[in-house]
Picture 1 (cartoon, rainbow, N blue to C red):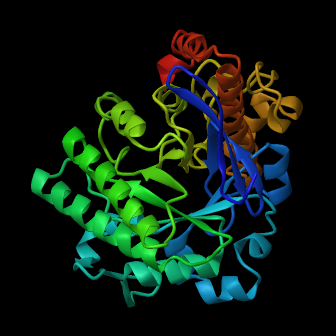
Picture 2: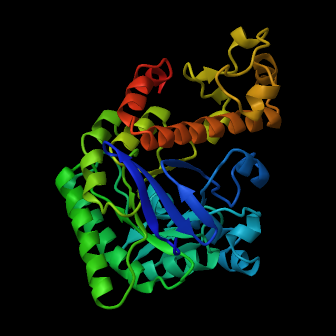
Length: 381
């Protein structure tokens, strides 16, 4: 496969199994991406990520641009060399982080001004500057700069976010030049189906105009602005129609979602890629995913429980340590507790998506989805 080619291996209903080529290797979907905000997945070494069969790791443009700085990452040889991770990587634009700090943001058609959370300095990003930063960081996939609307939000605010995101998508695509890196456009529109479909239409038009002028196309598409406070049921009222309105020949990436049931359902709606801090963040809080639902490892019932964390799991944590020991670590605020739970939770989601792919390849995704929804775990997520 040529660089950034996307092969649709097979479909099962709306669910898809893709193979996508990058400069750091191919990846296969459906897939979950561990989040390495500061060029590190918290508590997880790069070799452990490989053992977990992680494929793409996500890093954050906002945080890396502020510290240590995109120029330093480039000086180190790019983010792969900087963090010693050999596989494909993706950088988000930092837009979500910027707009989550709404009281410090000044927005114009030209770009966005915000205050650094690190030193209070005022920073101004245009779409072109954002592309320059992401090219310096050097991940395989960059995301366009966009405006993510909160939930709830007035329709007029969401309309403005769609307009601005489309205008910035056009500028990002025109500015993006690095040949070993591709750019994903992002769909916005809040919970309004018509605005979502309008956002998709405008991304398609931007791409068509770029290609007609001898420019580049989007390598895939992010679906942003979900999981921002709405219920899962509200999200699923529109998600499937939005995903299937996007081109069939490139990945569809639901941004910032890591709930296991949401992942399984979203694959059934035609989504291919996911990321979230949930598995590692909840691990640091002492929570484990399991085949029977979430487990709070601070619970006293685990004090004398010398069985594996999850009997159905084959990860390093479950193979070598007991619930009693993990509870002891969590209660003592020992670093190892969060590390072992992070290993397990990441394995849980990565393996879940691996099994989802196997079900798609077998043409049995509907059955896989129904079995999950009937399982004890689904009722707890």
